[in-house]
Amino acid sequence: MASAAAGSDALSRYELGCLLAGRGGLDVGALPKASKASVGAKGTMVRLDSAKANGLLAAKLRGAREFAASSVF
Image 1 (spheres, rainbow, N blue to C red):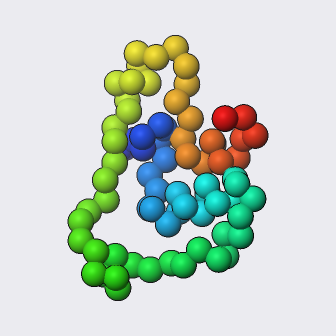
Image 2: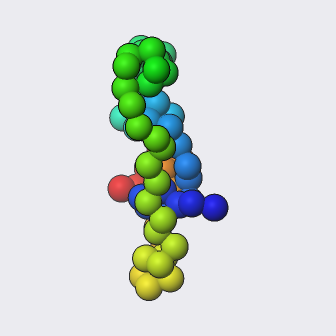
């Protein structure tokens, strides 16, 4: 499984935005949702595999969902 920048969560940009907005106390329902095709955007999903970093670092890399659910930065 591909990893996200800081953990194993594979998220869309919208899902990441919702997690961060919710963590920041903002109204998640106010975020507009659109497909890339509907706004003329191109490209594919981009993921960063952090498996090697996870193996080298003493600290655990938290996924976006775990980060959003925690109260500690």
